[in-house]
Image (tube, rainbow, N blue to C red; front, side, top):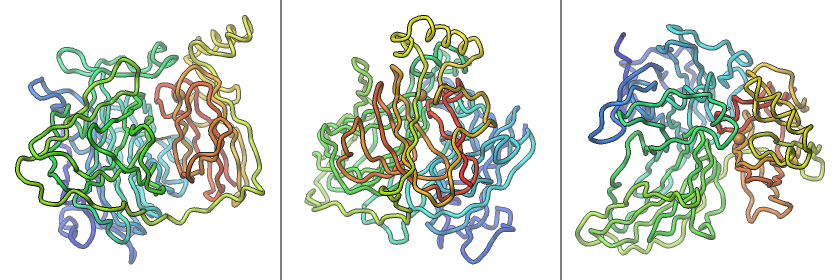
Length: 475
Ligand code: C2O
Ligand code: CU
């Protein structure tokens, strides 16, 4: 097999300092005044060391590494990414959270034919919003993302945000055997009808981490990305008080979560400002305690010894500059009720007796476990669940009528989260993926300002493939 093309971290730092990259990259045909040099990503099998001291793991990934290259680009630019498929099966790339034109959304059979093995596809799109995003396949996502195909795409604000370091933590979850190989059990009904494929090994930037080195007094911008198939993270930074400054890439009024915990459902991102107020030489655990009785230490923040270079008091945390998003007109929204159903311990089945039971058996016979408004989608191409008019405001009154969490993602547009269980959210919030607890009601609103057929699905990838997906048409 050909050696995968690899770009060094530096060559993808596009901008004034990144021009050296053009020598080794193909010229962009789509280059205009505001275009970045073309980038290239090759999806292919590789072997990487996820666990120190353990054998290498056979993975599928971009450019031979997990996560794939961190793409860092300036807001407002047009980017071109040539994706080469070196996998033994088709693939696509979806730019999660970036408001691309529909044709660049990477959804097989809907926005493009899947890229066949040995073929390539050029994605060209603008970067309207600064923030933290990620890319991943949308073809057999559970297996392809699960095996390591994911990476961060960071869109830098026009004016630099004042921090000492800007760091990305891409989190993923693997189900490894004792030989450190991924257990090839994607798509089984057990995972699909429960919490999804939870693994046994969590990696941070592709490694089971021991420590993350910090210096007393420095201010970090930490961009957390949950690239796991199914695992929800609830991170406690012991001894520290992180400030949340952005959710799913979109700025939010800086605040500290009431219980100190940073929660990320699959596909969600949280940007935090972290002032390193600990003592030099000490280590502080970052603990993931989302699942009751299964808390574990993700990593230690390890302070370098020696005196603090700064006083440690950094004053207030500034708000990030907002992106230009259309505010939904809440006086004039058209309201749609959306119900998520199915799964094991289905409340409807408990309530409805045999009828509900038969429905579940039927679905599971066909590999489906979940529904949106009573329907299970198999594959991406299907009749739209809703047709929306371009430019109008919509409110989705969503109810999670299941016994499980679901991170619900809309392609193409971002939405306001308005209310949870009837109570207004404490501060205005934009999202592309909203985590719904079992039984929870969530209201979201948005302007349907991006025409096309857009996927609307649970981002627990096993749930998505077992029917928890629908199409929203904007025309
Ligand atoms: Cu992150 Cu439909 O995807
Ligand atoms: Cu789900």
